[in-house]
Length: 130
Image 1 (cartoon, rainbow, N blue to C red):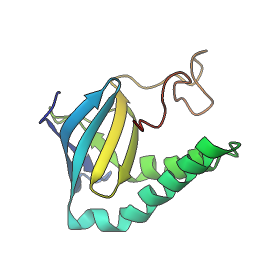
Image 2 (cartoon, rainbow, N blue to C red):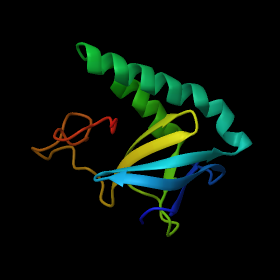
Image 3 (cartoon, rainbow, N blue to C red):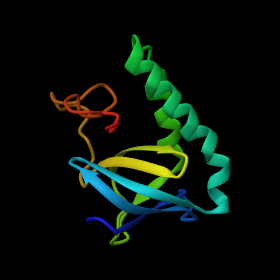
């Protein structure tokens, strides 16, 4: 699932929203060019709001705004790997025609001692910003 691989974003009905052409990686993050379809346009504000909330959280106290914004992203899209399988857990950011994400083949266990309250791992770079 390296460079040049094509991932996709779909809605929960299977409608293609965007293709993600992998251009780079820095474990655990993959970076890609976003190739949106017309169906992606209504979701652009959700991704914009998630980035704004993430940047506020990076610069100040966390009031849960990012988690709420990200839940809207997860409620709207399904990440599909190059083999055509839905990825059970992922953290995805979209800005312009760029996307970056990390994923897990297994659902996060909310009861795991190594996870935060939202199931995201606590350690490591959560933003993927280089």
